[in-house]
Each structure stands twice: as C-alpha cells, then as structure tokens.
Amino acid sequence: MALSNAYLKDVFETVSKRNCGEKEFLQAVSEVLESLEPVIEKRPDLVEAGVIDRIVEPERVIIFRVPWVDDNGKVQVNRGFRVQFNSAIGPYKGGLRLHPSVCASVIKFLGFEQIFKNSLTGLPMGGGKGGSDFDPKGKSDMEIMRFCQSFMTELSKHIGADTDVPAGDIGVGAREIGYLFGQYKRLRNEFVGVLTGKGLTYGGSLARKEATGYGLCYFTSEMLSCMANTSFEGKTVVVSGSGNVAIYATEKATELGAKVVALSDSNGYIYDPNGIQLDIVKDIKEVKRGRIKEYVDRVPGSTYTEGCKGIWTIKCDIALPCATQNEIDKESAEALVANGVMCVSEGANMPSTPEAIETFQKAGILFGPAKAANAGGVATSGLEMSQNSERLSWTFEEVDAKLKGIMINIFHNAYNAANEYSQAGNLVAGANIAGFLKIAEAMKAQGVC
Ligand code: NDP
Image (cartoon, rainbow, N blue to C red; front, side):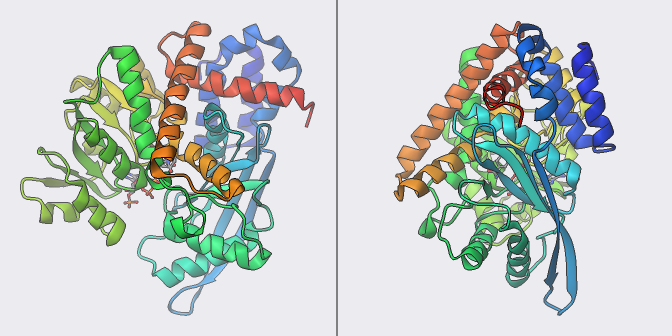
C-alpha cells in the first residue's frame, strides 16, 4: 500500500498482524488510512488521543453457532457473526448478510465501512455489521424461518433498540427481517424498534425498500450536476446485480431520464438495448425469487450471457455496481473507460478494487464511493428508528424528501472535505475524511474507551 506517514504505517502493520489474512478488512482499512494522511498532519491531537489506533479495532466481535433443522429432518450448522465496531456517535447500526462467502474478514470490512457511512448521514448511529455463511438460495420458507429463529436466539442477547439495531443486506429482505423480529419479540417480550427494514404493518418505514437505490441516484445526480454540469437525462446506464439495491437504482435512474440496459446476478447478465422493463424484473426477482436469465424468455430482443464480469464490457455513460465487493477489477475498469464511461457510482459495498478506483481516477472519471453513495439505506433505517421512537409513521413523500436532502448533503460534505484537505474532486478521500472527523471528535471527547 502507498502509505507514507510513519504513524499510519505502524497502525496498518498492527492491524495486519492482528487480522492476518483478512483481505477484505485490510483492503477497507488501508483505503481509509491513505485518505487520512492529510488529516494527521493537521490534527496531531487526534494521534495523541489514540483515535486511529482505536477506530481500527472493533469494540466487540461476537461469533456463534447457528444450529437448525432442514426440511429432511437433518441438523445443519452455520456460523453467525455480529461485529459491534464503533458506538461513539450512537447505537451500533448495520445490516445482516446471509451468503456463503460470509466470514470474519467480510463482516469486519462491512462493519468498518459502516462507521464512516453512518457518520456521513448526519444521524446518530454507530457502526456494526453481522450475518452468517448460511445460503438462503434454494431454501424453503420454513427452512429460512428455522434458521432465522436460531440465529436470533443468540443474537438477541447482544442487541437492543438503544444498543445495536441490525437491518437487511445481501440475502436478508422483508421475509428474513420478519422472522428475526418475531423471534426477538417472543424471546424478550418487547415490541421495540430493534431491527429496521420491517414490514409496513409492524413498524417499518415507507421508502426503506427503495432507499439505497434511490439514494444512490440522488447522490449521483448531485455529483453529475455539480462536477460535470449534466444529469441522468439521456444517459445509458449499466447496473450490476438484480437485488434490492439494483432494482431501485434502475427504477430511479429510469425516472430521471436514463436508459438502463443491463442487470446481472451471480450467474450472468441480461442486456436489453431498448431499456430494462423493470416490472418484469420485479416479478421475476421479488415475486417468484427466480433468476435474471428468465427475463430473456419474456422480452424479445434481449440477450443473456453466462458469467457476470462481462457486464462491464457493455458500452455505457454511467455504471452503477450494485451487486457485491470487488466485482470491478482493473480489467473491467479499463473496459469501462475504453468504452467511454463518464461516471461510476457505487451502490454495493466496496465493489471496485483499489486498482479499479485508481484506473477511474487517473482517467478523470466521476467516482462516487460506496460509503457516501449508498448511505441512503442506512439513513432511511435511521428515519425508521425515529418513527418507531415517536410511535408515528411518515408518508412516502416525507421520507423520500428527507432521504434526498441527506444524500445531497453527503455529496457536499464529501466534496468540501476533499477541497479542504487539498484533494479536490477526490470523493473517496472526501467521504473518508468527513466521516472520520465527526467520529474522531466524539471519541476524543469521550476519553479513552
Ligand atoms: P440482494 O441480496 O437483494 O441482491 C444482491 C444481488 O447481487 C443479487 O442479484 C445477487 O445475485 C447479486 N450478486 C451477488 N454476488 C454476486 C457476484 N459475485 N456477481 C454478480 N452478482 C452478484 O442484496 P442487496 O441488493 O441488498 O445488496 C447489494 C449490495 O449493496 C451489497 O454490497 C450490500 O452490502 C450493498 N448495500 C445494501 C444496502 C441495502 O439497503 N440493501 C445498503 C447499502 C449497501 P444472486 O441472486 O445470484 O446471488
């Protein structure tokens, strides 16, 4: 890595030793530390208070066994995680991911990113993340329910409406949140806002489902307008994934005048030169829980290609990676640049490798980093917590307007921090610095803890 400050190098060495081989976590830490070099020079008081030494170490890591019984009566065992990373500015907040790739490194990287993202929203939320290596694909509803009940039986000992408030992420949508909430309520005999992303009949917020995708587009619109005097209008857009974030990013980008021509899943991607018909995608993915390739059976003129990486070879003006970490490597970034992409904005967490980011930045492409661009989901989760505390429900329009305001603010905070620390136009640095400073002040004020 390209750290030049001796103190930061030392911090990174310690983190590397303590978290040996955890490549996703080390990648996330190294990006943030690089961005903090100019801050360290201006703020020796934060070094003295040991803020950076402390921020890279989770406050608590909980790892637990999740035993459950499948439909054949066979006992299955998965591993559960909750990383409570930082509570300096509020209760831990961050999603639960159910995917076979989940391990300590993935959950720690997500929890670490979440600290800065939550700080950027301006809402009082600390950073955390959790999940399991359970694969929900192909499981029956009853298997999902039994897994979720077992997972919550242990997790309930560590969370609470004022302690730690999990939400959804990959593999965790309304169905899973419902089962998790039901089990928490049963175990604790408490009806409280301990999870967000809840159903609308039991304390969920309107616009939470749409929030990450919509927020990504609000952030990207502001970036296009302020940094390139343009908009989504008339642009061709490629979106990866076809889950919650991808679907609602497609919906809002289309509403803003763009044509989205591609979507993917972990098996392959579809291309529709006439613009994706989202009602068909929603039916396949949200109603039938099917695969994206089923789209081509229903839409003449569209094509399906096996393998998801090829999606980045499609010519587009704007790319919105909304699937998973490290899905755009250097080669894919170079293909996007060669095809004339003018903006890349991240809906997924850490979807671009460091080499891909460098490729975009060198080519002068507008780049919206995940922790700023996809913060709309957690911001709206924060709004769900406020509604639960007030025992009130706001209208869709009220929540959407607040979300838009938050995303515009996040863009300007990141943009201004980049300018202030001599990194004009570098929103990666700007988002890291702006997110960090608020946490750092809180940690310093609260003493060594
Ligand atoms: P979903 O589970 O709803 O969807 C994930 C999508 O990504 C699926 O279409 C999945 O396909 C696809 N995918 C997974 N792995 C790969 C891969 N290796 N290559 C291509 N496609 C892949 O998750 P979300 O939409 O909620 O989350 C997507 C990303 O956005 C994640 O990085 C998440 O952390 C991030 N995010 C989500 C937020 C939210 O509010 N939901 C908030 C902020 C960030 P398949 O079905 O084949 O697995």
